[in-house]
Length: 249
Image 1 (tube, rainbow, N blue to C red):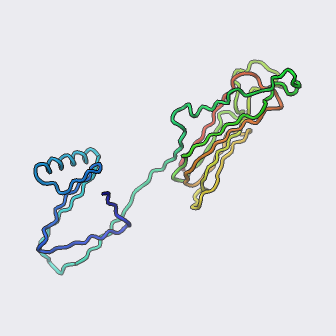
Image 2: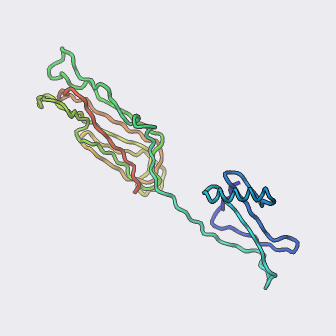
Image 3: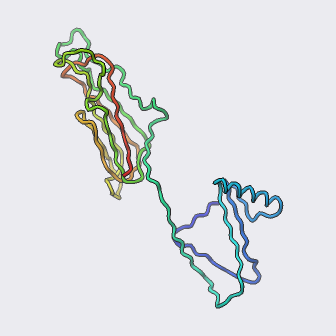
């Protein structure tokens, strides 16, 4: 059974009576297997195995040995020993982003444009409607003050890198998009109940960030490319990347 000191003060009761043998205790707990005061040939073998496991970083050992001469002065029936307990917790940020890289490849498929031969010339080849993507993870957060950052690789949004020639008054080779991340968290250095937090990068921007206190919750990332209706889109492949960063401060 795992033993843990509760609180910052541990009281050790020391006793001595002529009828009680002096303490000689050796206890092991190795991967849940307990060994108490091993004796005899088999006990020696078991103890040697436990010591090898501890040397290899597995298990733990408890020993207590006691010996004392006769009292030199009036005995103290109770002794309180104060232990100062301390430890550290490493700073960490986590984000579950699927089991492989394909989970992070967001494909809009065919981005529809108005291709009908009965379209008005002022509408031909314009986007039929917005392109949207929604990404949700149930596990995200940081265990210290942190910042959530969103960065696009190109302020123009999705870009056609090989558009060929086109009339720039009538066509464009990029599709602007906005990104919004939302989660439950608290303000920087705040110690309070979490509320809805968000970071937004508009279609006209390429980066945004928000500092905050420790948080853990699901996170939703919404990507919306509003329909381009003032110009037609040049045919081809449109690509872009967005990077979400959780960084401990």
